[in-house]
Image (tube, rainbow, N blue to C red; front, side, top):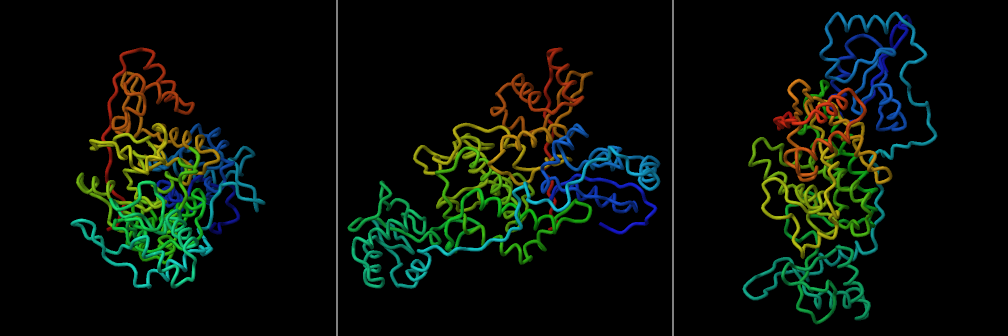
Length: 489
């Protein structure tokens, strides 16, 4: 915090989170006022979230106080009349900090409860990684014909077994076990249409295989072997999300309105992120609980959006958006997952998304095993932050995922660009998200309004909505969606 004159008695307190553009813009405005600004990151100090909500009645950030006077969020700050803003500045400069000033985190806490990390990762090399590296240069991988089709960069089970025996001195049985291990650990995959239906590896079979890095696809984390011992999915998603969020924050403009994606892509930290993303290739997904799946795939989705913007640029029209969400992908646990697959296939229980005629996963698709049993409506408020106030959570953890998601929904609904209640007209104006995914919220306007009411925090807006619903014949209107991007190139 900057040094200020000793005669300044009070302070401005801002509750924010890393990577929140509205928080950055608010702090830039406050920084020009010549008063002490104390920035409290509730991402690092989640124990303060409940107290902040109690003081403000809001779940979103930023929340701004001049001494003990609550101003509101960034939008409220920017709308202040110059004379009112000057009055608040004078309060901070001339009046002592009152006893009921908003709380600060304890200094030097003994431990962090946020689950956040510094993005550092030490690779423990997997026991089979060196063997795979040797096999790549063993003159075994080549082209093979099956019928009229030629499969490049492939090999048969017998070719692998012969190489293991000759070059590694293995007995036939040990070589078979090693081949099965390579298949199970996702170092290699069956060639589509030329694999074993039972997923087993053995000699004398007509199956063809490829190393995972040679399997043709457009995943952003493909083309290199994941050589580390598989990292638990929840831990890996947290590391990735925190690292790219830190990158995003460091390349966010001072006014919070734009992101320098070009500078971000040239940052050495982005290279570390890409190396870590490669480890998603062999992560274990089938053993994840519902809570672990929610946290993992929400974190990965949000990280993949930023990675996609860095590599391909942000989409600017409908066709580009369609391609972006259907082609930007990661290789996860040996399978390809696009943004569309993650949102509609996994998190919405394999439901059709916008402009989709079919479900993302067919009955025989192995990714169907990962999908949640039903749609989770709350994920729509965690995948992106398009409102004027962000939820006070950017990285999700399995431990209290449902509570975190509900907080994100409350933060979304308290913004007027997401939900407006007009008592005079008996109208409720909602984000276009509720129209696109109405099936997730009950399927009818009546059920949708009840869902919105049940997921609002206690506020005057909730009371107004209750009154409008009770009066009957409520009209639901869906607000236009703002597709504008925040990139500087």
